[in-house]
Amino acid sequence: MHVKGRHVQILAASLAIPLCLTGCGSLGVATSRQSEFVLAGATITGTNNLTAEDFLRGMDLTAGIPVTDQALRQACERVRQLRIFYSEKCGVRMDGRNLWIDLKVEPVLGPPLIFENFVWTTRKELLARLKRELPLFTPEVPEDTALNSDIIRVLNKVVAERGIQGQVKVDTFWAMRGGGGYVFAVAGLKAPVVACVVQGENAPSEQQVAQAVPGCVRENFETPLLNWIAEEIVGSLYTSRGYLHPVVEEPFVQFLGEHDGTFPVRVVFPISTGPQYRFQSVTFDGIAKSHSAELNRKWKLKQGDIYDTAYVSEFELKGIWDQPWAQHDATSGDAIHPCERIDESTKTVSLTLTVTVPREQETISPEKRRACGGGMMVFSFVGEKFVTAPTGQ
Image 1 (cartoon, rainbow, N blue to C red):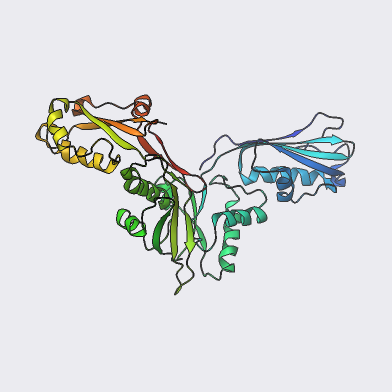
Image 2: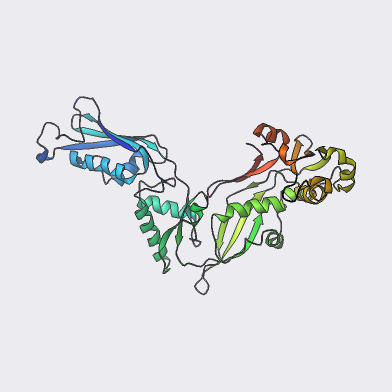
């Protein structure tokens, strides 16, 4: 991530005795004498992810002992060089010989850090280890931060402690494909996924998951794929059973122990179903309206049946697009706009399938999408819930 407009101002507060940290000597005393002041403490504003204690520890400063103006300049300059903020303002307040550092920052939100195949530990444990050894570390550091070399150094220590012969690298594969995360991986480590399971009430069996999402069991574990796998599980095994708004907690990885130099894992997706919806009615609109009688004869869902989104999708393809009247040339067919109107009080769905010819296709506004009650997956990488929400939100 390239951060533009970075700037640092090192300010001196206009109090009893101002302290200038750049381009000037120490407080009325020759610079060579390196005047010392007692560092009373620090404040940091603009971020909830770092504390004053983090700043002092990261800068090798200790409250309650003397500090030179040179050390203060170096500390503030070090913050700038780390490139962990969009901007920083570093100043001091003084009361006699007591001195406080005031750091005001404007954070930049980087992509979430993803630890690709550290399957023998957890993301929480890795974040805690990085924070313990790198006080100025946060999980949202920018991609171009100077902390990267330190992050890799700590992760390599974690790998070595496990007895693994491998080096940590930044994996750019997913970033180049819009993966949305900053991925650290152990080069050459084999972590096959031997099973994917779902936990929760009315969860599908392991066999059903394997059949619906065959790509989940794979030669090597890849964290960014969990998002797409979760979406596929929801679409294939939940909305098809009428659970239109399931909530998927962050998947977790069960390490099964080292075996012949590999690190096999089992991936678990905790999912709560939410309410189950049932079919109420279907109507056809647009150029399909004149064919309603024919389409209704083909329609199999009955009032009170579980609302099956897989059946609706199949009907769009087989019941509509396969019809001679629904194809206008060899390269483009009609557009089908499904509109689900959900009655939350009765947990029923009334569906309208509107068919338009290509020249009449339009962009469906968020307002229309919300009115239709359609669902979409809203998901992000580690640390968040995967949820379904009304389309357009």
